Structure formats: structure tokens, C-alpha cells
Length: 73
Image (tube, rainbow, N blue to C red; front, side, top):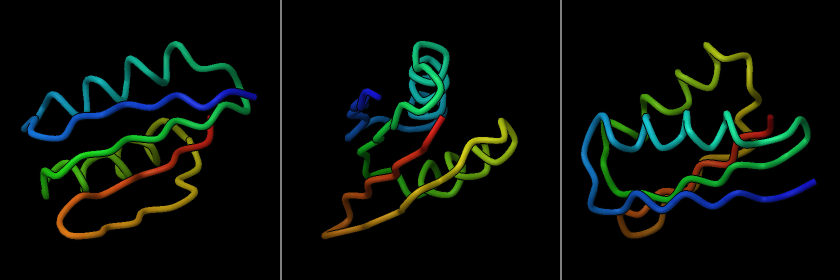
């Protein structure tokens, strides 16, 4: 099991979503993809995209406007 870190701080849609999808393609079943960003729209879109791809959103945390979303493939 690996962890893939995707840092999209400062990026706006659709970049965070595109980067998340790239990471999902590279990931093996059981891997955790952690996306870090600060775009409010992406914070909503990434979990919806994960659901559409039947991936499990493990957690969504936010501190000082920086969010971290963990997705299990």
C-alpha cells in the first residue's frame, strides 16, 4: 500500500480535479491518494468525483483555508 501526495495549492478548477484523476490512474487498489489544496470549489468537486469513480473518501480536513482530502482506491 502506497500513499500518493498531490499538492494543488494555488491551483483553480479544473487543475485539482485533473491532477486527482491522474493520481487515481497511477494508484493501485489499496493506495491512498492525499490531495492538498486551497480552492473552495475543488474541495467540493473532488469528493463528488471520487464518489462517481466509486472511490472511498477517507477524510476531509481543513485548517486555515488549506484542505486535505484522503481517498482510498
